Length: 354
Image 1 (cartoon, one colour):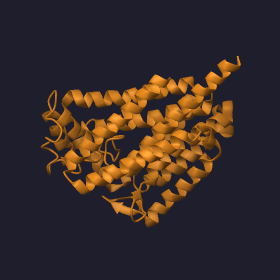
Image 2: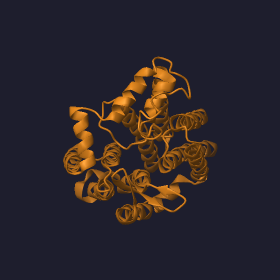
Image 3: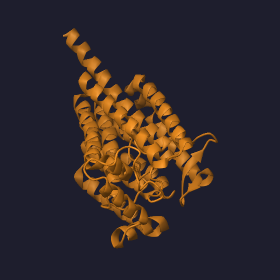
Image 4: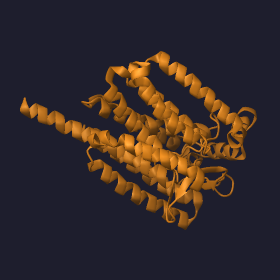
């Protein structure tokens, strides 16, 4: 287990270092780069705080923390900052953050706690399942009306997967998943920016996607090298954000782009192993859910850049510019590591007593 935790830490640190280099390369802006480094520092501080905090503590606070974030999501509609047609950020003057990113993290942990507390009742619609769905609906509703359809989809996929792994019945999942898909489709049809992105995906493609695909292709097998991107120079809009994977492919080539996806798979597999070795349901579902949230975010981001998925606002974990995203993903890894360490100590203690 110690070897796995070291590999996990090394993998995440490697992604953060690569991301920092790419953010500077893609932006060419020292001010933005300094902002990113500040976010990295905050993320590392948050990482160490959550690394030493026993994960069992979350059982008693997840409900109240999630309720607080739902209030923030609602408040975002009135006091939030509008960017690119969406109101997703709350500004504190020196720092702005996205409550939806925090909501994803807290919802995973709360669902894990709820499933453990309900036990086999999670398979009963009225006595267990409906409570979990209520929390998912509340979070998803306030996220989708920001509007933020892409994050809503992530929340729904991750939440339903946790419910399935936690013992929910397939017939309940199919009914609610179908209803959720219909509502998301309606939201995508009604919201102008979502409708535009879907239309471009089905009947054409945006300039950003076109230029991103050119960047990926121009990287060839081994890439042009760090700092030698051409597409980031006024061709790919905001290349240091959601479309940074295109610059990664251009500078590191097919091998580098594939290696990064492999690193995300490595993170997920280690999270699965930690989940399997956990001695409690809460730890198992939390480790699995957070690992799944990271890997699906990464592959959706890559899919968008490659043009196989509609354009979204999903960041590339640990690499894209974005303070809230970087901090939340770093904290997620810290929680998973804490689960691994505490369960390993628990097993060693049991062996010593035996």
